[in-house]
Length: 107
Ligand SMILES: [Cu+2]
Image (cartoon, rainbow, N blue to C red; front, top):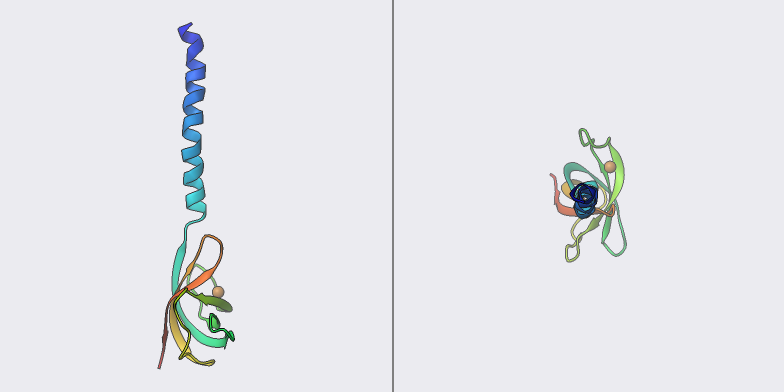
């Protein structure tokens, strides 16, 4: 009888551990990433929530390209103009949004 219980105990243990392992995998796969680079503002949306920036290469991440970035709720892009050189930091969220953490004009 004791020997027959062992497999089911092991099965129960693996079932108990499975959700934790899945949660850990999901957390890792959806980790937010933060980057910093510089570039030039190409366009600003009419509602001043989204800015397109032609950014420099981010070593190990992506080459130079133009991408859109969204201001975080409450942040404003007022005071920035198309053509301005900027340095900025952004976070890529788990659902793929690129949110501006910081944006500053360069001389
Ligand atoms: Cu890019």
